[in-house]
Length: 210
Image 1 (cartoon, rainbow, N blue to C red):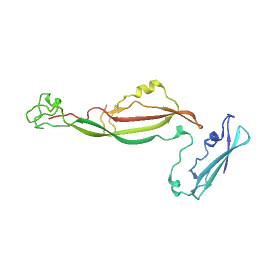
Image 2 (tube, helix red, strand yellow):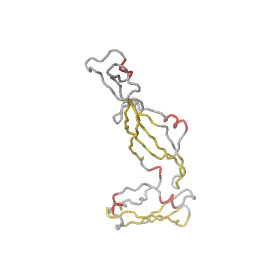
Image 3 (cartoon, rainbow, N blue to C red):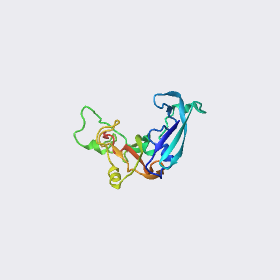
Image 4 (tube, one colour):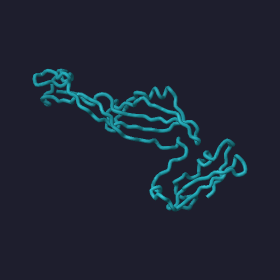
């Protein structure tokens, strides 16, 4: 199937033309107009000038025979990286915390603030050093592509905390690590930025009592 593409920039090349709006991407099903064939998918695209640098023809090739049938079930990303969906991943980080304690008599907690000092031994002396344990806490990583960034926004994002409850975390319990952005280039959009953000638990997650 051949599509005709018009451009107002004579510097546009085949890569730009193949990604023009309305032209199916590699991996898309055959569904031009009112026709549809779930067994045929796009396997390739070729672009060539049609007499002038402002007019192009894009030939889209379909096939029903694939070496790997799993490709039928895999979504294909658009050529423009700015149109890619955000990538989300979960992981864990480990840190050491004081061992959470409890009141000797939960029904009659001490009215003094001594329980805030840590865990005490049977002789009512504080353990020194205080017992510690390892805790694995969830880390959320989101990576996305943006057209541009500015320093003020990046500095505002660094060390932000959550204002509302989210994913089981209380207010101000999640901290956004300082973002690290790197500039990349793609023919479809020129220079763009790869921006990963990382959220993790910060501070104590409870009160340590004896």
